[in-house]
Amino acid sequence: MQTATARPLTPGIHRGRIVGAEIGIFEWRATEANPRGVAIKTQVEVESAAGVARLDDAADLHNVGRWNAIFRAAGVRVPHGADPAEYIEQLVGREVEIATRNVTVQRGRNAGTTRAVVSKWLLPLER
Image (cartoon, rainbow, N blue to C red; front, side, top):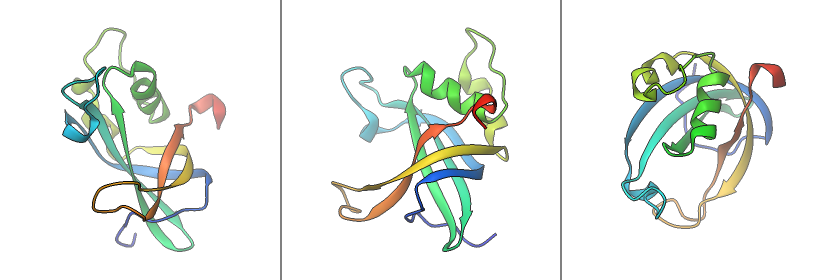
């Protein structure tokens, strides 16, 4: 695989591999509903005609539906009521199918650049 970069990707359904996953405190994720900015952050690499694209995704820990979709799309079972942090390492290396879209960054050092983002983690029944 080539070195991955954040780049535009034709929006649609793509197959990729989770190459990084962590639960952490990310100041940029802080909101009234998530004052500490606790989130699950994943990196997915997708091969395309333009090379390998890396997509970063973050799901606030209180957004149970989103992080549950990440684990289910990767085929990792997290028992009801379990701490997802205990299962986060199992995501790395898993093949997943995702729906993507392109967005233009509005603020920060990358303002004005277009990059692909995960719009939906596809569950096995949706494949």
